[in-house]
Image (cartoon, rainbow, N blue to C red):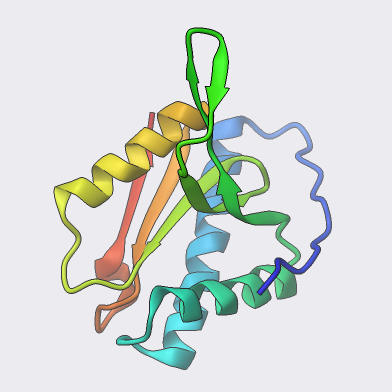
Amino acid sequence: MAPIPAGEHSVGTRNSRLLHEELTGNIIAAAIEVHRELGPGLMESAYQACLCREFALRDLAFRAEVALPVEYKGIHLDCGYRMDFVVEDKVAIELKSVDKLLPIHQAQLLTYLRLSKMRVGLLINFNVLVLRDGILRRVL
């Protein structure tokens, strides 16, 4: 499912930390709504498709399946890395639907943040009874 276009938001004069906290709060609220509707146990792709719709309904600008090249000695190499979402060009999101988040999942998010030069990322595991138990926020 292709992302549904969403409107741009003005950032005003508030500091970037508050903007990131407000934005991650909105993203988490959208994920909670999807989890409330679908529950745990589906494939990651189902949650991703529904999050596209939820982000659009909340007027959040986003891109899905964002290619992330590796830069090595001045050239960009396509190594097949893809971030599940980038929201408002500020927050990277990695989705999972697994029994338990592992250190490798956190490492994946941190690698995406480092390669994309983004500061804030969310790792969201939908395969939990209560979604707040499946959310990790990381800041570089």
